Length: 119
Image 1 (tube, rainbow, N blue to C red):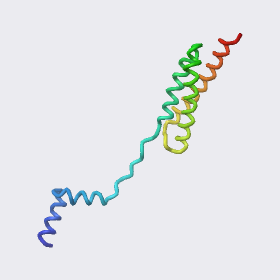
Image 2: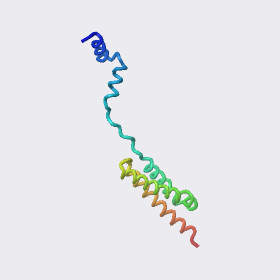
Image 3: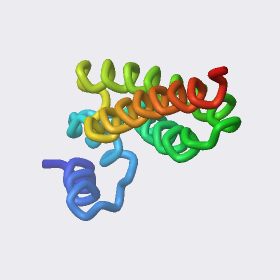
């Protein structure tokens, strides 16, 4: 071995040559990282479902707040469920609960509307 080869080997072993170690680190494949789950639709469904259920019993407010929030909760639940089936999202319980709460809020809003606006 020549002096140059010994110097390169010494630098690699002791870590004094960052350039050579950097090239070696780039050549080695690292572990694959998975993208973070896309749980936004399921969480949105849950939040909108809770809001819709909370105000669905108030006669005038339910028509302007609970109905749109309930529709949004059900729509977001469908989007979240599609993401769960595709393996992109992980919040199955939030998505189901949000969709159910949104549907309940829509039913209660319809009953309150019929009760207050019937002749």
